Image (tube, rainbow, N blue to C red):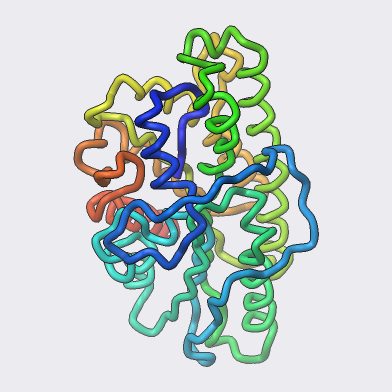
Length: 301
């Protein structure tokens, strides 16, 4: 999930790294902090031919409609007491009806480049093309949810936050190396997200895509001192080099691709103590319920 692009104390960085940076989707459902491994790729990476690494297969009823979830640890369900039942993806599936199958391709730690590199997008596209392109109208992929972008800023933590190059918001904004790193991360997200949405739209021009913004986990939490950092990263702050944030990129690319926008951010404002799990970043069951309700309300309009 979203991690602030500016300096946090080392203890918080450790929590964020453990909670969000992992690519281990074999963690037990009740474990909010799967093991992490270092990532060295630059946020300005360009896409290459994806190499599928997921073993998740379309085992849902071939004659029934299907819902596909794409994303990172939020789609995977980190922070839920039972990711198979209380995370937002299964809750959305429950809201779609008993006959709708589910393929959850959420992968903890993925950023907007890795969702393609790891093959999750390619797998989703193949299934959409096969199901929605056959003669059986009853087995179509009826919904794809997409949440991505929170991990795109991870390199900033390893390269600038942990070594102390950018020790706080004020000083970070005064240092070109800090400002440039954030700008580069934002600049990389936009084309990556555009390519993801284009691939889904090409697979089926009429596909319903629910694209989600990201919430500020610090808003209303026990560490409210970091709420302005989350606001800057996600919504932008006037008078800074970042008047628009990551969510503005998501909104713009979603509108351009005619996706259904699910604006999660407002629902979590001031609700950190209620909606955020003990890892300080991911939603708890109540937070995931709010996310699921937002998705279902958006696609019902």
